[in-house]
Length: 454
Ligand SMILES: Cc1cc2nc3c(=O)[nH]c(=O)nc-3n(C[C@H](O)[C@H](O)[C@H](O)COP(=O)(O)OP(=O)(O)OC[C@H]3O[C@@H](n4cnc5c(N)ncnc54)[C@H](O)[C@@H]3O)c2cc1C
Image (cartoon, rainbow, N blue to C red; front, side):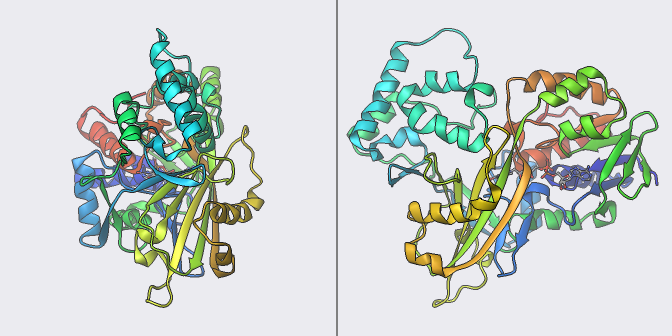
């Protein structure tokens, strides 16, 4: 088999690339997808009890007009629009997100620790670039907020010690400090919520987040080879061998699977520098636990953060609030809640995955999301293990990417997307689709890519 453009992976990046090629009038392309459906990490699954689950809470935070237009054309009118509502569970209470603007919810002693830390951080400002994420957190937030929230929460999410991470990825991802506002909120007892009139997101009426990509995949189904894993790449012969042993020849290759695996397992004889660079990239894995519970409780929260050690998850989504179709059926007397919990794991932070479902239910009870009596009302327990969850912005990342990407591109291989590009800061769905779109614009029209650069 032969094709001009070969794309590995039918996740948001691969589908974005395929769709843009089609828009540009290019039809000579193929997409290889190793799993049985399209969508990658943005796929959704329906369990035997009729609950729909995402691979962890997925919310569209679009930064692009092109992506918004595409989403509208894919969903038509079949979506719901919600206010983003994020909360934090701390010291037995709920505080609105972001934490630092709502520390009045803490007991007085902890509240003072946070303010004292902020004042001291201000007094003792240190010159020069922080050496790592931990130092950055301590300098910006001070000791109190760092120890109560930022350090434990980030370790729970990344499964990586903050001293092993860089902070250059932060940009708009972590809201930083406005001391006057922090103090005003404490003294005047004001709530400072991150949701407001423009903080809304669209969610598919049915099929979960994955419905977006199922529909996008349908537009180019004749180009997608499902259940076909790319195993070996020969950049000289320009061919990819798939699981069944067939070789597919290409002119240009776009990889959207994990970059480290591309180099270490699939490339013929990579140079030592590339092997070292690929080996220095780190990631976490994420376990997703869906717990469906009979009985309705009014609670408008979308998702919740859990920095403390009394539960295994770092985040839970009230998935029943995203669409009534995410639960089996909704009539007045028979209603359900669907809690979707995320737990990270890594070599540093090992988890007994077999025990996580029970620990998750215990954690939901401990945090008040489920009552003790709800244990008998559990209608489903769905779980999924994802080995590549978050590409960690580790200290070696940027230099590794500067080694790997030019070397791959010199051989006609491009690697983009959440794990293909390995940049968390441009690793959401909108970024990923646009990395694919911009790659197609670059390869066909020579237009410079804006979202991704190594
Ligand atoms: C827990 C969690 C929560 C998230 N929350 C959000 C959110 O709220 N908002 C948001 O915008 N984004 C969110 N994301 C990110 C979102 O899932 C990604 O942006 C998106 O899925 C990345 O798309 P991708 O195509 O780059 O990679 P992937 O989704 O990983 O897709 C890659 C595809 O390539 C296939 N593949 C890999 N190797 C091969 C091979 N050798 N041969 C053939 N096929 C292969 C895989 O099977 C997969 O289908 C979240 C991700 C996670 C894990």
